[in-house]
Length: 374
Image 1 (tube, one colour):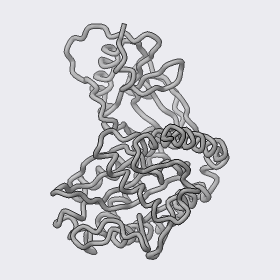
Image 2 (cartoon, one colour):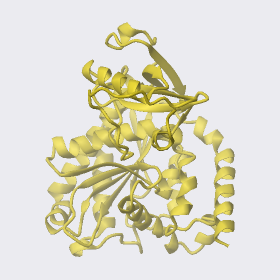
Image 3 (cartoon, rainbow, N blue to C red):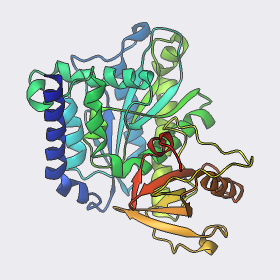
């Protein structure tokens, strides 16, 4: 029975993927940069109630402040999934962004736990890397049970089942780089400008992120269950500061796209242990696999020549929709790829990362490394 439900869910996801391709490719039609702001929960769904504070209220206040500041920019159009204390179905939140052909989807929430955990987290879509990430996604996904007709619209999806999350990466895969870029800007602002503790950029299976057809992030602004943090987030000062940091990150992301290739790199969101030391390594050749080092991603098309990339050579370029990705080196020897990464780090591309290709398609690096090299 469980297998049948899982298969039904995957089929539903694939049908949804095919039927929605038109919306995916329609992105960017607006003359303005469209940002959809989503305040989590609302109405009869209060969200977390740690220390007596209401997540739905705090999230809404932060979102409204972010929107107010973004609307001062004549080149940005802001759309809200809700502006009052109302319940919005999970699927409708994503649908609002898709109908608008939005450039970004930003969902704001507050976290909760049973101990003294505190700090911010910003999530992009991905299979849960650990049990803790899964539990955060599970908690946010369970809002579907508050919808009267959830069985009809979330066929076979069970927030409590890790297997149900496997299909969720299909739609957002193309936007992962951009989502991580925005998430990184957000977390950097929380730590650099506000001196808040950051728990990092993470991946987890959030349904609302899966169903959007643009770069999307879900921000956990802090733990209401940790009294000092709950007090801060419930204050006018805290909400204004968090909103300002999020607003600045969105503007930074937009500027990065508008200009040229930025020095953007993935943080360690996949929890993959990638060696970066300079010690001598024995050959680790993976037959049929090509390792490259991604050094940048941008909407701007740049000639892949060494003089454009701080004398690194060879440089290659791949296009994924409206995003160009730039790579240094190409080898089937993973130890050689680590050397390339060290060179790129030293050359000024600190934070670059190794990716793997098989038959010209990118494959998960962690899966490749789990297999045996020749």
